[in-house]
Amino acid sequence: MSKDEKIIVSACLVGEKCRFDGRAKKISNLVDFVKGCQVLAICPELE
Image (cartoon, rainbow, N blue to C red; front, top):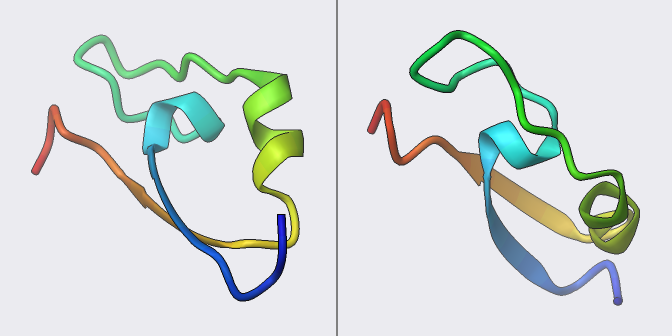
């Protein structure tokens, strides 16, 4: 993916502790996939 691409991902999937139980659900492959892109990490459970 290029640095110009903008991607929206669920914050807990990239390692932010924002789930209902205060934990993250990090997916390492996703983190690797979005490296170098502009990432907007949001938490649908908190927004």
